[in-house]
Length: 243
Image (cartoon, rainbow, N blue to C red):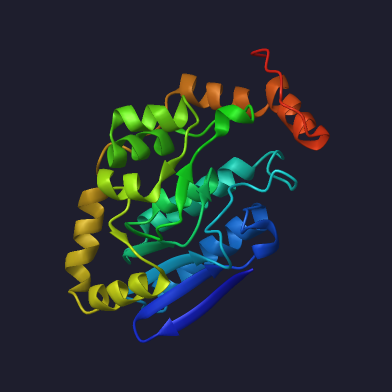
């Protein structure tokens, strides 16, 4: 489920569920969280995250357990583990990063993006939503206007625009990400730990309000979310009614 390779002080973690375009379910979120934690505890000085095959991560696996109670908490726990480990994490975005795949890329400290990759968070197309951290982190990286286009307009962002706006730190493939990780791995670890803490003290860590939490849960448990699931199975456009 999660492939692990080590090259000196660099650990590469690969999502290995290419038959589902590396979509996330509860088990995969737990496995990735544990793999990131283990890599940091084993002394890796840089961690690279990537996806098997032609996709980075197609998001939450809508055919799995993602609508069950607790999935969103498990997903956020995994994302915040990546965000909080003292080791620099580089996302090698080798293909589309959709929904939770974009969230995974946002959780990383740096992003190396293949030219054919794209980012999208089409939650409004499937009757669900994303948490405050995701919305604020996206706006911090790409700017408020483009973040609104992606979230409220449910539009994609291609690799070249992601690079121009700063979401992608470099354009390139996995080898480019691993080469950069090797260069980062020889830098002073305590300096990097402090800088990561300072950079992540950006307001995105603040707790969501009760109203925001209630609205998030309402979307996930709504009739619209159920309608989106039914429409997907019946291969038709969903009809949302706001309830």
